[in-house]
Image 1 (cartoon, protein in one colour):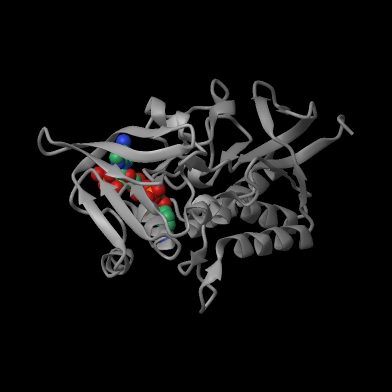
Image 2: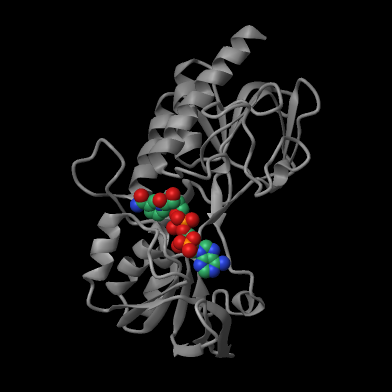
Length: 311
Ligand code: NDP
C-alpha cells in the first residue's frame, strides 16, 4: 500500500480541500484527501451561514461541510483521516509522513490546511484554557448558560461569537481595543441592537483571573490612557483572528513572515516547489471566506491537473 504512487494528494478538508477534491476527482485523478484534526475546517465550528451562494435560507456550517464531503466522495475522491507531521518536497516524488506512521508518495500536492484561532499569548490564557477561556462559542458556549461572558475582538468572528452567546448567556461584554468594529455592517447592526450585549471600547486584556474552579474575572488596561479595570465574568471567548496552519511545511516551501504560504503571483495557486499547490486560508490573509477558499481550491485542482498533463 505504501508503495502506491498517487497523482494528487490534497491535505485538508475545509472548503478549499474538498472543492479541490471534487474537481480533481471529476478530472479522473483519483485524489486522496487527508482529513486532519478538524475535519471540515472552520465552518464546522460556526452555526448560521448565510453568505455561501446557492442557499436562499440560512444553512448550518457543519451541514454545509457534510454536503461538500459527500459530494467529493460521490464523484470519486478518497478521504482518509491522517494527520500530516512532515513532508519532504526535495525530490520529484513528494513524500508525506503522517502521525500514524503512514508514508504517502505522490506526484503533486495541494495544501489546504487552513488557519486556526489566534490567542493573545498571555500566560494566564493558557492556564484557564478549557476552564473559562475558549476560542469557540459554538463549541463551549453551552457551559455558560445564563452566565456572564466576555468576547475579545472586534472582527466578524468576535461579533458572531457575541451574537451566538447572547442567545445562551445572561450578559455578553464585547471587549475591543478600539472604538470601531472591524466586522461587516450587517453584523454590527445586529450586535448593536442586541439588548444583553454591552461594549467595552478601547480596552485590552492584561490577565485572566480565577481559581481552581475556573475563571472569574478579567484585568483590563485602557488603550487610550493609563486606566485599568477588572470585570467579573464566568467565561471569556478570544476572537482576535487566525494564524495559518502551515507548521509542518516550514523549510519545505516558501512561507511569509506570518507563516502564510507564498504563491508565485497574486491569484495563483503555484508555490515555489514544482508540483506543490496551495489554496484557502493557509495562503489567503485578506478575503478568508468559505467561498473564496472554495474558489481557490478549484483553481488549485485545475492548476495541478494541467501540471500533471505537462510533466
Ligand atoms: P479579523 O482579523 O477580521 O479581526 C480580528 C479582531 O481582533 C480585530 O478587531 C482586531 O482589532 C482584534 N485583535 C487582533 N489582535 C488583537 C490583540 N492582540 N488584542 C486585542 N484585539 C486584537 O479576524 P476574524 O477572525 O474576525 O475574521 C477573519 C476573517 O474571517 C475575516 O476576513 C472575516 O471577514 C472572516 N469571517 C467571516 C465571517 C462571515 O462572513 N460570516 C465570519 C467570521 C469570519 P483591530 O480591529 O483593532 O485590528
